[in-house]
Image 1: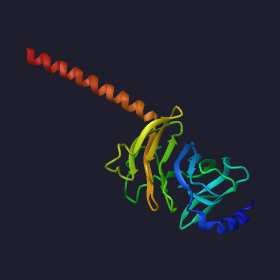
Image 2: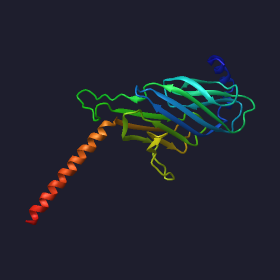
Image 3: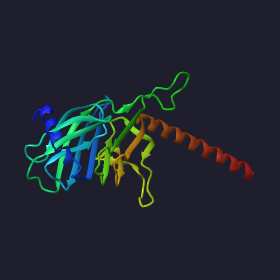
Image 4: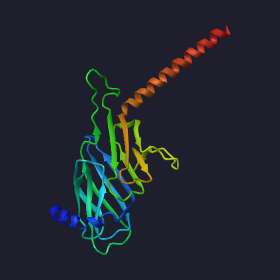
Amino acid sequence: MRPLALGLVLLLFASVAGAAEIRSYTVRIQVHDDGSGSVSAVVKIESAMPGAIAIPIGFAKVTDLRLTQGPAGMDIVVTAANGQTLVQAVLPGGVPPALTLAFGFSVQDVFLPVTPGPGERSTLPEGSRVFRHALLNSQQAPIRSYTAEVMFPDGLRAHAIREALPKLRKSEVGPRVQLDDINATPGARLQVDRLAQGDSASMQIELVPQSRSVAWLIAGLVLSLAYLVYFKDLVARRAT
């Protein structure tokens, strides 16, 4: 179905767009060396019925959108509303109440610019990058569970987690963002139990070149050995 035709159908079914609920929503982001990313998403829906459904995706520049799992004959398109990027689809007749949608797409420029202001010096070592992902649930139905997993490109490692939102609720056990291996690749995971309309979830991570970790390890060993030698001489002097 062409985007224009799909848009008209979406308008016709707008009155039932809030009927479906997202039970779980998992996004996986593979970041490449050039700052682009390959994204896959799995959305599990309850109370599904024929009509339009809009899924916020948290990325601005989306290309190569493709449906990898869903009801036969369903098409999806990228649209924008109120400054938010959405994946819009029309569920066909005969859909079961519970179903899974899966889709993938490509994004550009997933890293934030690391440029200090005039007269300022960067606090990050050369070659560092800053990754940030943020999702705003702009839709009426809540997202009961949202998970975003990012896999870092080769040669970069996590240095610090600078943003992990929303703050943990009293009933939740943290951390909100956890550094972990994703498919045997160093990465990070953002987990939120519930996102109501207007709620957002985000993570920001500083990445530094892996080669620096070896340098810092060697420097630490040298300092440790120097301390041990000094301590040994100090004890020897006190003993005499």
